[in-house]
Length: 250
Image 1 (tube, rainbow, N blue to C red):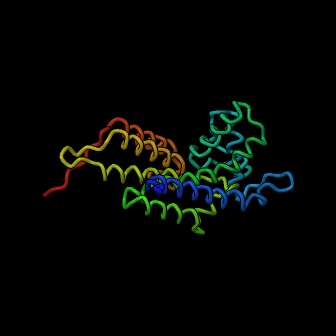
Image 2 (image 1 turned 60 degrees about the vertical axis):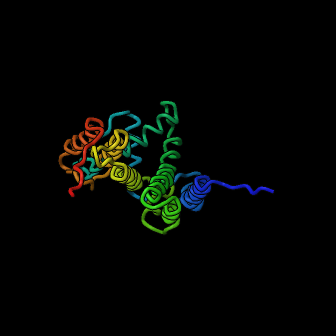
Image 3 (image 1 turned 120 degrees about the vertical axis):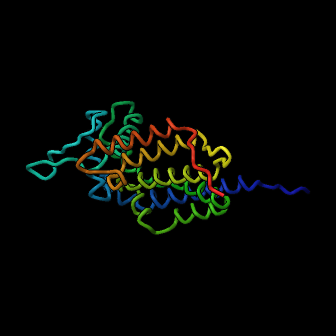
């Protein structure tokens, strides 16, 4: 009787799918009663409430994002110190889910689940980083560690913690993945990196620059510089593709 053999790729894919399920269980099911309680939807951090305040305003004036908030530093008001991409992304998803007319309940429910989904999606680039650098089993192990480690990443990617940190982690991880792919797949003779790889590097890094105010090129007093830097990063990924790297000497 012939034995059924499963390919290593299929086994790794099944294991990664199981880890994604475990990640959702830890991030959604376990804290669920703390977020959905007594008919209320409770966010789990102060910053999450402020992000949702920005999202509420953004949805009422879509796609205009406020840069000055009269409700902070009362009675003077203050500039909004966070870059807008996280709020744009969340508001855009809410807008699509609600077909352009979101209710407050829809806004809160999508906002609550948003960090858990982004945190779970981070397992995919982590897996591919391990696979590209070593092998698929290292990728599975890496995704497993990210899933189970009781870290700041876990606490910031549970439902209700609607803050930009989890999006920053996702976009940075994807950027690193494509940088690794760029270095691994470059052709020494022609010093070329594929067009698709450099485009993804540009897009993901630009998303990161527009998501977190501790990005390398951020200046809180000159937001236009950051927007210009993010645009330039994304543009260069498209303009100079395939990218050229100086070949090693010797």
